[in-house]
Amino acid sequence: MSFESLGLAPALLRALAEQGYSEPTPIQAGAIPVVLEGHDLLAAAQTGTGKTAAFSLPLLQRMSGSAPSGTRRPRALILTPTRELAAQIHDNLRDYGKHLRVSSAVIFGGVSMGPQMQALRRGVDIVIATPGRLVDHMQQRTIDLSGIEVLVLDEADRMLDMGFLPPLKRIVGALPKRRQTLLFSATFAPEIKSLAMQFMQSPREVSVTPANSVATTVSHQVHPVDAPRKRDLLLHVLSKDSRRQTLVFSRTKHGADKLVRFLEQSGLRAAAIHGNKSQNARTRALADFKNGRITVLVATDIAARGIDIDQLPIVINYDLPMVAEDYVHRIGRTGRAGAEGVALSLVSHEESGLLRDIRKLLNQDIAILEVPGFELSSPLRLDAHAPRPKQGQRQQQRPQRQGGSSHRPHAHVQHNNGGEHAMGNRKRHSRGRRPAAKA
Image 1 (spheres, rainbow, N blue to C red):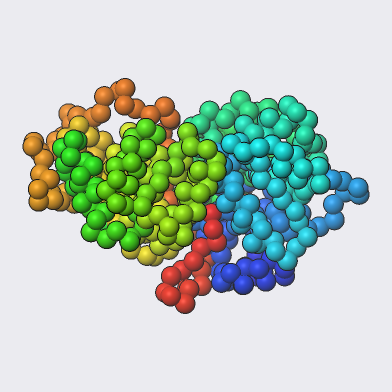
Image 2 (cartoon, rainbow, N blue to C red; image 1 turned 180 degrees about the horizontal axis):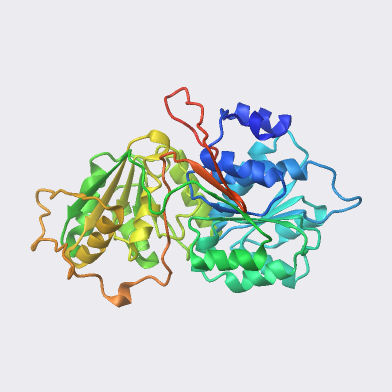
């Protein structure tokens, strides 16, 4: 299957070809025809599957058509949970629409509203926004949503986890009743289905990834270590190759900052990214990590949304996540598109129960490798009574389901009267890597 066969406009095909994309991923093959036909869509897809292109390409095609006479109002709205993901989608839209006369603006908190207001006054076709900042603009009447033809809810599961349902309802209540709605989520959990029934009209369903699947190219390893020695073990691991890009997950914002200070004092180039950082600091840290100015990025789960880096060789869980499903999402940042990756977890005795949950979820053993000089004072317990961190250490977030995966399953397209399957493969990159349209 090719992008041409999906019915995309020549200008879009040209932009895709210039970026080295010739064949759609499963989510693109399944979703693009449904969106072009004008149906509402409920799509199960996560970061790394090419989902952004799955809604961006047909959206750009629709926006490139004739706009209502004299309109300066936005015609499409994309809602996403984090600033980083909003900025990433904006970049993708500009790349895919470079040969079209379609304008877009990104709206999120942490920065001045002034430039955003100016962009809206000039008039844009597509607005990409986080819910909180969009409500701010609605309250100040600096945005007119009465002309919205298409609404996209990206990572709907995470928006619910972050408590965005009230502002979502307020935003949707301000939109025209007659519109096309596209909802992308990691899972079709009951709360997502309920959301869909409130906001959508007879949506088609496209599902491309089995629940909690992981890339087969990822090697899972555990280094057991006593909690007070975790920092030293992390430094030991990182020092083996100080030039290697490494994403490190911390359970808390405070812990991420402390870890970065320790690594910097030890001579490593590191930065933290989490919700308490200013938008400028988050943007700078992510840019520095992508271009290699820093080699270690310490992130919390929510802040890691929007990190889209090809061929990230290793992800380290400095702290295990409190919810096993979050492990799958974390390690989806490595082993993409057929490349090999390592998911390394530093596990203390207190986290034995969390490791047991992860092994049960993955339905596979994880290699437990002691590092000489960092042996545990007592062995990990992986039975039903294995200990877990105390409740006070738990982050205030709901379970995150299903992580990024690089294997390429069938896309299942569910219609009201049955279903069909569509497969898509991407053209191999000249370096042997199979690029996916960014998500």
